[in-house]
Image (cartoon, rainbow, N blue to C red; front, side, top):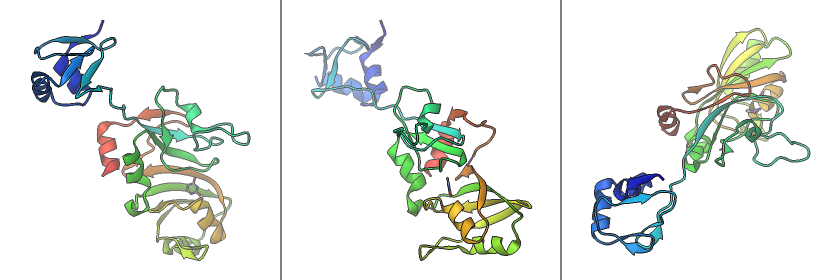
Length: 233
Ligand code: URA
């Protein structure tokens, strides 16, 4: 029987601090099982007792979840499987809470994908005005010359609109790292195709200050509080 003091229970529910809860209790604003309680220090059974404040039931605030996944190929960033795409990234994360992916990676793209149930967090990362940096490792079928890299850096016209300038670093003859600050559909694949170098494989290695690190393909972990704060900033 999980018994806790009423003021502690109210503060854990996010309703008020313990001191403010004492004030609510003394003013007769809190009911336990339908009866007003004004007695300080009363304990409640968190599983059985019904606690109301100002006549509405004190419910647990939604627990906010933040996850980093190393997405493997073959999984779609969607919450609903379809006949064409039966494997979704949610199949890889076995938790009870309902979460959803923050933006998308193509089915064939691997790497860092965030998942959450916090809408503000999603906005801080994918809203175009945030211009959040996303870094990708791109492998080509053939060596890529400097001329093509310069074109990628300048920005490329897609459907008549020029993409923002990017930063590109060549890390092997047929491999680059590219940093985008926008998230047009299949942007990396389309701009590389446009400059004449179709993508062989694509991996996202960083979102803002968060790197993929050593998560293996298909592995996930919870973000730390600090990482969440930095991503929201
Ligand atoms: N750009 C792409 O082309 N694909 C992705 O999955 C992400 C960025």
